[in-house]
Length: 332
Image (tube, rainbow, N blue to C red; front, side, top):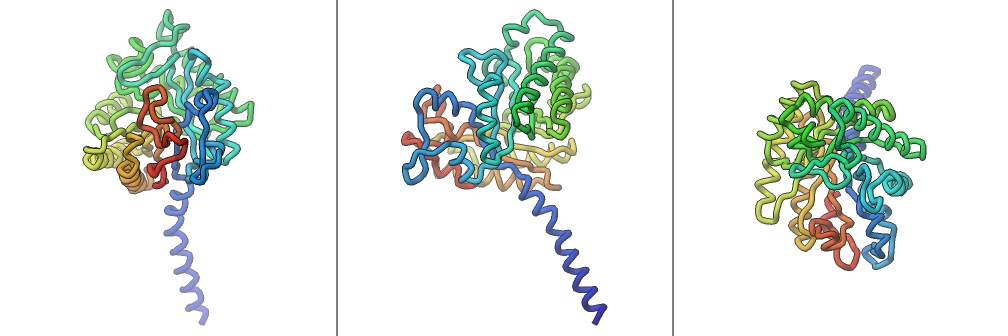
């Protein structure tokens, strides 16, 4: 009798042990949204509504759609103050109030940074590599410490935005990976100084291009670049999403294995008017991220679902002109 009880207990323990990685993965996986425009939209009079037409806080709406993480960009000295430290704090506190984790996306520019432009902030333009390293450290540290001192815990930090061709041009371009790594490592060090457990993301565009990810991260690693998570942007069209999603899945699996680091889709989007197709695309890329071996797929973030159609020329949000979220957000 005792042996039967013991065998049953051992079997139950084994089942629990097997289930733990799955449960842990489900618990920590980030279903996220970048909502960095939301304060500016609200200031211009934009409002957001639930499916019944009741005006509702967009952070609450997103929480009700199972969005458990919010991504916010930071610019150094932006025109109008949007996405500076104070604006970021305001939105981060709203996310924290809903129990959502926070990702901070440092562009290290006064405006947009992406593969086609990585403009040094106006106040940094006459600096040497050593001076730029100091600026990257102090800017990263100061913003994160400001958030921390005001009650915001940051879970992830992006050191640069879509840096396929480097950042802080020309000094930190990929023509010198040693310079690039020297700069991003300052952001890494500053992050750990404020939030030791925060995970640092290095983020590239074009998740479908595995060869580019290999080229970049092989060189970045060789130059001593530090990072904890590989971040990717993914913007397929209605006609090629199936092919590009499959290619993005290959990239995620490859780089997760090649560098033994987790991967995240930190930006994904599709035209707001194609919500049904966007829903299928997002559901598929979420499944592919969750299927990355060894539970190294950590999350998918929509960019920016709360953007009204045509807001600042952007049409890849997930909102109707009536201020309601589309079916593109259902997979979360």
